[in-house]
Length: 126
Image 1 (cartoon, one colour):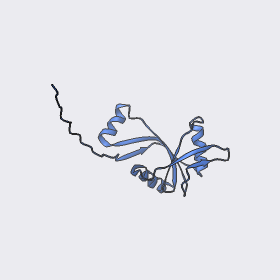
Image 2: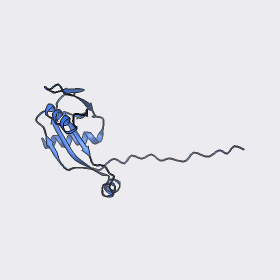
Image 3: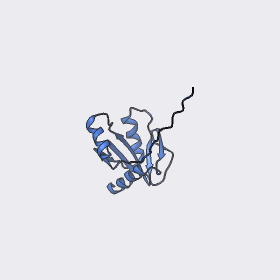
Image 4: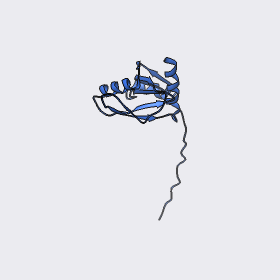
């Protein structure tokens, strides 16, 4: 005997974050300075930078693993970044190379609405 089960109805919804709270920020004088900082803070591990609309940046989100942050995320759709570093970079380039020959990948995230809003906010800070 074969029993056919009906497929469950699945609803897909889009509920974007409503707020990003940045706890610390730093404006670097150049993209290369940001790349050097990135290399130091990660212990020399390769990490990419983000580029949107003339700014390049790096951020560190705080995990929602604690009940306080999870509640903020679920109830208010609010996320926290412990750090945001940024610099002006008018034209996109897929890699940055410093004078010390450090090569840092750069990702164009212009299509991401959240990060596009972050870039707009950064421009207001400069």
